[in-house]
Length: 138
Image 1 (cartoon, rainbow, N blue to C red):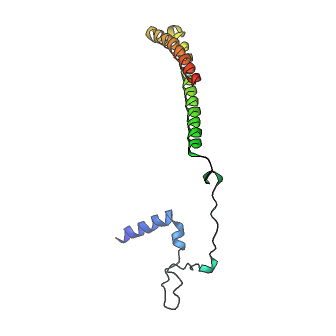
Image 2: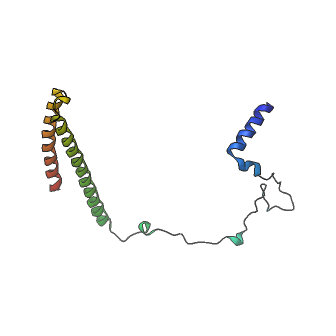
Image 3: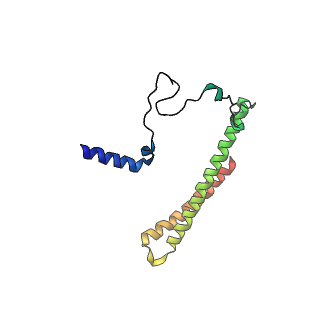
């Protein structure tokens, strides 16, 4: 049991070296009630001051009407959605490029893979144009 305690103390000292610097516990006495048990002096009320809470401008109440806020948020959502569709179109365009490379890759690729990639490149190019046209109408 003594070896277990010694090993625990050594391990604890490794992870918390400041623990060895801790002061011994000082008990409160009847003569000094304001002195806590750990040797930390209590802060008296005369040291405390009231500070106005700083609220960032974006959190302050605005005079925007509810309907105006709804319109603004809907416009923001539409802009984000259009950007998302644009990202999809860009990713699909990259897929078309890779599929076309495989389709034109020659004998290095299996015949079935080349044919499938040729069809994918054609179909994806058409899908990109359709998606772009739909996106631009909104």
